[in-house]
Amino acid sequence: MVNTPYKKLKLNIQEIIAKKRDKLELTKEEIEYFINGYTKGEITDYQAAALIMAIYINGMNDRETTDLTLSMAYSGTQLDLSSLGEVVDKHSTGGVGDKITLILMPVIASLGIPVAKMSGRGLGFTGGTIDKLEAIHGYNTNITVEEFMENVKKIGISLMGQTLNLAPADKKIYALRDTIACTDSIPLIASSIMSKKIAAGANKIVIDVTCGSGAFMKTREEAESLARIMTAIGKLANKETVCIITPMDEPVGYAVGNTLEVIEAVDILKNKYMPKDVKNIIEELGANMLMLAGKVSNLNEGKNLILENIKNGKAYQKFLELVENQNGDISYIENTDKFEKAKYIVPIVAQKDGTIVQLDALTIGKLSCYLGAGREKKEDDINPRVGFVFNKKVGDTVKNGEIIGYIHSDDEAKAQEILQQEVIKIS
Ligand code: URA
Image (cartoon, rainbow, N blue to C red):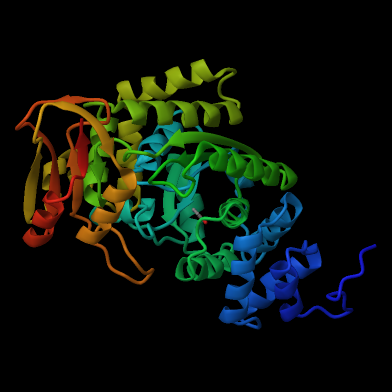
């Protein structure tokens, strides 16, 4: 046995911080001591910040990450969804223009798989499903768990905000990480996501691990490491977990910004068009969800069912039911022209013939935030109307003078300022 200067009969936070600072492995008891103490307010923000920074710099092995996840998962309420049948949850590690939940979950529900999903708000340049749903007039994301369960029993789907005391340790640590430049750490991201998923009650989980400039994971190797540890944690917690790595170098689909993304999701559900990247993501995630639910025996069968229920209108009907059931005004969904527009819709015009070589997700995410679509701090208000709608994706050819996208802004000067930047690179 290694004799360390940190071995004491009674735990204390200074010694736990010092251990991680000195690159040593934390025990399960030490991790639980930190999570319990911090959740109860007995460990201060500055002590927690020091430990989180030490974890950020020196990392955690799989066993420590799993112990951290489970302590966080059990730090508050845990939902029991067993009365709803085989719920398969879905989560994304975040990105720009990511409206996949709005499209895929109604598809899954329309195929008879119960959907009971709690979603989050956007922070920084990444968007959040709850902000998008709240762009729909009247849609109530703030329902009780009883209403949530009732909704799923009644119409097979409910999407709500994280109003419950689910993984409160994550809530505190996530907010802290954001203020101390510790968001992009694999053990911290894995434990944050998996603790919420474990507490949210589904026994089967499909996770979209986004990878690229607009994601936390910038490289394939990082995305693979995150996927591997989350799958392992899921297994240890008895949750069948499948991770799918998807690209996030350009925004998903054509629209970025809350109302603009709802309109795009509705158009896709109405089968008006289907961006190639959206098709790939919903096929991959959806087919895996259907496999986990035991609905299909192979991925191809699953992919066909996903697309079929968009084409036959069943997924759109389920989305209407969802909106109506949560008090949303479906006339906005039936006629998306009713959504209030930003004051200025300014075209972005190609300055030469060529091919689009870059539509950088991170840049566009940050600029959307600058326009007001995202928030810097949790308490900030957002403007649902603003953002971007592009007409092109990377690889598309353009002609000099062609309109390749629009900036939606309530502030003309900001739109003009953005026009001066090379948001879309043509070569
Ligand atoms: N999503 C989360 O819930 N937590 C993270 O740390 C990153 C993405």
